Length: 200
Image 1 (cartoon, one colour):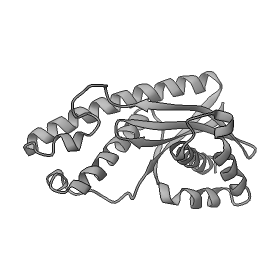
Image 2 (image 1 turned 30 degrees about the vertical axis):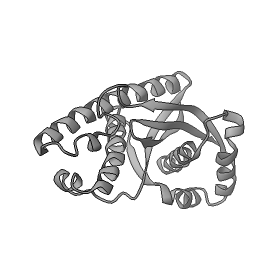
Image 3 (image 1 turned 135 degrees about the vertical axis):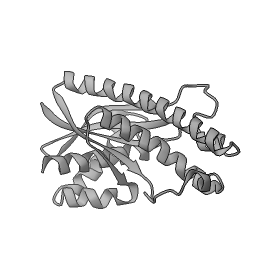
Image 4 (image 1 turned 120 degrees about the vertical axis):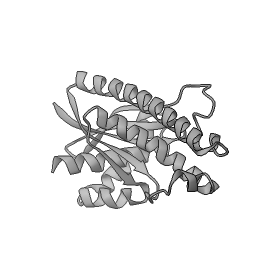
């Protein structure tokens, strides 16, 4: 079985997932897909913290817990599909990397709901954590990696070939076709770094 890694950049209710391998310094995209982690039409599911902004604290906690469980379940289903495809092609996933923003710890729910900027921050972390827990439930070691540090991490992992790899990532859209936005690029960088780290 050949080693592979998953990278994901999460948004509200969905994520851009990329699975990669590194074949003698040559990047190979094994899978690329949009994963949906909310049920369409479910009130408040896409922006759960916004939805509970004016709820009583206990009601807010219950709603968020239910949404989190559902998002984690949907993320698990998506991850299993990816794993099945990769295993069928003789690849073994050694880890998953979740691209995150600042990574600063959040305060209590009560304080989050009193500050609108924190609501946005909390929602980002909500979906990243749902994916991370789903990944870990499938026995995949999971790491959160700050987006602003991705290029530096890649340079440290591939000191002689990082420029070549970054160029490959930048132009991969010509081969893969759309969408190949910053989401896919960041997810790919994170997965490549994690793959190198796991193979050391």
